Image (cartoon, rainbow, N blue to C red):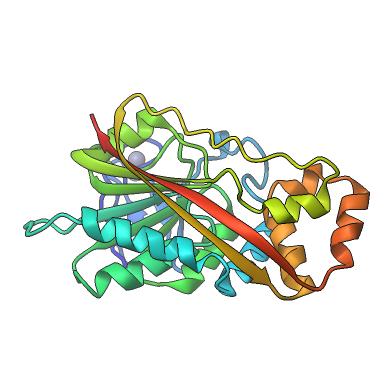
Length: 280
Ligand SMILES: [Zn+2]
């Protein structure tokens, strides 16, 4: 079970200490650990809506789709990169943080892969969507999952060794603050050709992705790796889930969604760009 190490109080920023089923700071602010095992550390004033982040429907569609293994090549690519970056022979156990972890598919895959190689690694995953964190906590009790904003990460400064930011907004100043001086940041964005064949069904004039890298002035890019494959999405339900989990759902004309609903399978390219940054 996780001890939720290195977290800080979202109210006063003092360290949070686990006491049985709550996390408390020295000022007496306390946060319950939910029965599912996660902690809600998002203050109401930072919740710009009643239920921030991706909707329940989107999050559940994403979990169903990812659990079928369609994006396993990316999970594998991430494992390979993380293994290279793991600190060697340290007295302190490394802390890995997934900033924008969604339903925890990649966090959980990395945890399984990396703890088989080094048993003392600690993991934290955070996301602003409570439903995403609820599902993530159901995957793995050894990862500390928290509901929090990545623009105000409730982590002590210079506590994380490696940060991952996949398909989520990036926050240069917060990432630089929570990482250790020689820490690494790994980002994932969709590549140029990602899901192009799906877009050809949805749109009359599909565009390639523009591969916009996040702005990270506090970091130096060390390396970049591309994961590219063709996958066979083999059921109408999976195709529907794929569209539901992407922003396309909200931007697609009705005719496009109708064209998709007539398909029972689709071969489409997937492409991801994994970038490795070091903190300046
Ligand atoms: Zn406090």
